[in-house]
Image 1: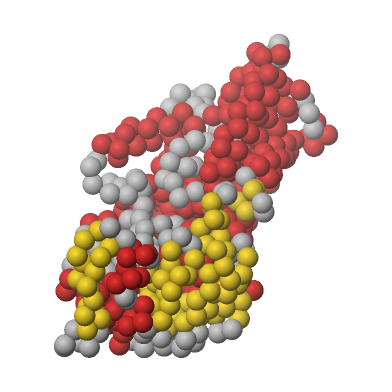
Image 2: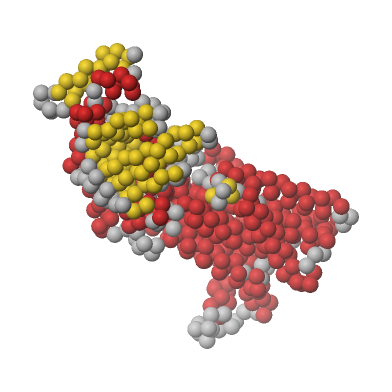
Length: 348
Length: 255
């Protein structure tokens, strides 16, 4: 298994590097891979003197200011959503869960809608959308969390139901704002946001998601044993020394933080958090020692490509990335459902 | 290491399941818990391995309250094999048995050679080495049970709680498992349905009926025709078997 894991891991790392390079090359102005890497290395202090700047200023701007941050954000969001999905599936012990089950995306939508339609938080300038979306997801998460506590304990069943109830209420608020709005443009902008887009990527707004992703990823990976035990059930977790209540709370906080930050910069991109962990389990089994890192890599590759397709499919316009992920992910999921030998976690 | 339940009471909703139950397992003793269906055996064991919290009363591991210590510390000393073990997600046998090492591992620690050897030993002791790469869901009920026992052994705890450990096993594996547990010289408490098995292996037996301990003592003291009639509702003839020297039950008819 270790060997198989290493093969997958190395293949995916290489695939990710190639995919990211290709994704930077693709666009209205196409660029050769040589220039892509030359410009990137010229930005790294140690190498900058060794590289001759034989590219044009506009090429540099396209590569460094526009495409590289966007492709990196795609990788971070893809990896983050996939890891968050895998963690949530362990938390609720159910493979149909995704990171949005805690009400995060509908909370973020309320924040984003308020900014777009009502012009709320305008004093925050270009960051208003992200900050409002994060605030919305944070409030939703706190609500769901408080509602799922019974006598100081987190009830998983209540967590799922509270997530659904809070999502419905918050969606109603967003929809109400949309219905009362007279502006066509605003409605389209909200639609766009809900379906997800990485068009807003710039160096200024990828640092926070990147740092949060790294922290959450490392913490989750370090706790792979506990995550495995959660999958086995309460009995196994308790008898093997997991402090169940504490660990569940930690998981909820980690997943919510990560998902909230990602949704704030990219909108609620669907399907990645649900489908990637499934594919990964199919490839490497249920052991979270492997599921966590492979999910991150595969999620990153998947979203880099989904974003590249979103950019070029109806160029010069952009397709919302959520349409791409669902359109590619849906059929694959149906195929997975039809396979007899794949266990969705319903036992035998 | 000793394990003790002191005046443990427990209810589910308004239904009283355990009423002031006290049992004591001395170091390296093999204690059996017998009683008809619904008498509270599993609930008592669940209270003892911390899955449930007693409404009143305490459970003491080496004279110390188990609820006042960290889960990890308890898990190093006390292992449990529960009655049914549904595994929803699919793991292979070695991965599952390796999970028994969890309480011994620190956050940044990887599985090392010792862990590997301990897991190998547990697989060998339960006779499932040949299954190590098989997926758990493809195993038979008896094989699954042995995986769960192997996981508990890999935990290297000195106290073992077993809820009907021989359930699902064929006769050969029943005897093998009970022999194995006996040779490990651990402190063991096991809920048992098979009274002949209890007579053969237990040093001491507690009898539960409707959530109360109604009788306790050595197998010879406990297993009498009167008890079988009063608690289990069956007529039985009880002899001392000439080979084992233990009580031997033959059921004659139900009440």
